[in-house]
Length: 104
Image 1 (cartoon, rainbow, N blue to C red):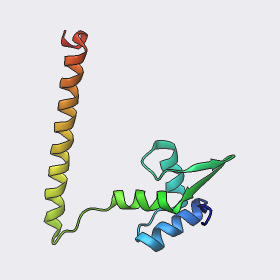
Image 2 (image 1 turned 45 degrees about the vertical axis):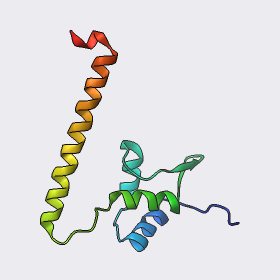
Image 3 (image 1 turned 120 degrees about the vertical axis):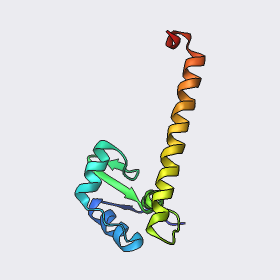
């Protein structure tokens, strides 16, 4: 059994480019660590560390499904936006039903 190996930001950036073809600079990883939306990381003191598994999971989440033309992407985007709106609408209904004070 191998111990989990962690990568610093520069190595994580190189790993994403080499393994997934996703360009992501160390400064972008730093920004995403602050605002959210980046790969999961851990800290050793003040040093952020990324596991290859977490980088793989994040990279996979960024990839679209297979498509045969660029218009396929437009269709997928519209469907994702529609699904997001439907989930938000359902959440609002559930919140209103569970909290009568929101019905004012």
